[in-house]
Image (cartoon, rainbow, N blue to C red):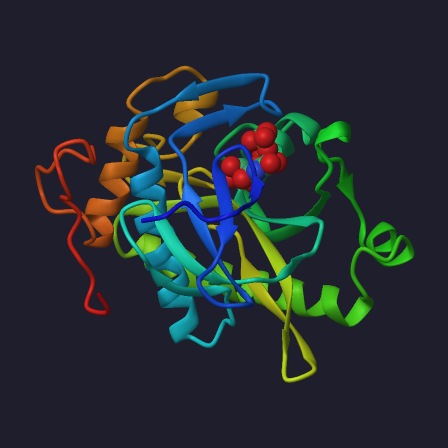
Length: 259
Ligand code: UDP
């Protein structure tokens, strides 16, 4: 395949120009970063797993009426997406205390929260993505009040749906981060779910043992990241039993119907 024009390169993904106007190709790299890229490693097979897990979740969310940028998976590492204007806000939904909320509020990791909590972070690496309030977001014009309401409502629906989905496969959805974009269609602007949802952007714990099946394995030097992501894929039914996840030895992920 001829190499397309690179539009943007992030820490774990590259965006290329798509085959048609208004489309992009989202390429999942094997790079893992944490602490605002101060820690970096290449982990063979991670991109393949995230591509497939994110595809699965975006398709399921689309089925329940969440509008998304996802069009279709192209190959092991790439998906075709609609081009959107990314809103510079990371929306985090939390069900159980972990990571920054545990530290900030002095909560023991693993403490269930009284209810699901939505937080906003301003996407700005130079500032280490500071937490911001709705007031900041609307005052600085990063999103308009109705957009923010829509993002919050969608984030909570996504949380409800994904909590149930993961509970069904013996996994606790502790927290996750999502991003939204503005999609222009027929002179209308719609807010759609964008970016990715994968074990890089969620905290996923085994329901029985609390074993971490997410990027904390990398952040905390626990090892076994690819095995953990494979376990998530396997439980979601998108990776065959006993299959190593590497794409070096050919495709091993179960292909989906739409291919
Ligand atoms: N998260 C993310 N990207 C970020 C920051 C956080 O995907 O830039 C995810 C993270 O994986 C976790 C959730 O958002 O699932 C909440 O993260 P937290 O605020 O606890 O941040 P951390 O201390 O893990 O960076």
